[in-house]
Length: 262
Image (cartoon, rainbow, N blue to C red):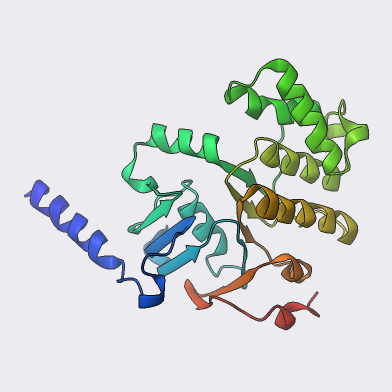
């Protein structure tokens, strides 16, 4: 009985993803998510956060996901980046069906291919800015000299060349966010996932960060998926996806709609 139920569930998962549209057939995607559903338990109730989302992103594209708080933006980013398994649907990233892999292989995929920028910085209190960046490169087996040079170059790019040896308690919120961004970019990832990357930054530093992300996309071919409330970022995007109540409401919203929002 258990095996029969499991088999039926697999069939449901596979059936949840709709067939590609004619214009999508044969196209190469950096991220191809289909039929993504995710629910969470709230007390005695199950709340549907993602309600059958399809998300298709081309290599080298900068895509913003915008929508009100609670619309499912961050959950969608977690599902397509290998951080949180959806209840239904499939995610193919860089031609890899990530949720068909073991947890260990997913972790390795993220290390090798993904850069993450989170709202909460996730810095180590005892490490300097340079060491924060180097620690990821160490996991990637880079030599010490290469790690140090890459950390210095990336921190300089985000305007922190003078903060290489400072620990987080000697930095402002904006500086800590830029260290976190440098850490994500230093390994030259193919996929960059950003959750409110400019939330702690003023306009000037926000522009520096987004210019860097755009450089990664256009010069290195990185694909950028950015969840944000920050309407100032619209001018940096190739495409804006809007989401509301767990459903995508537009896959190519007009940047002008967000130009004067604050």
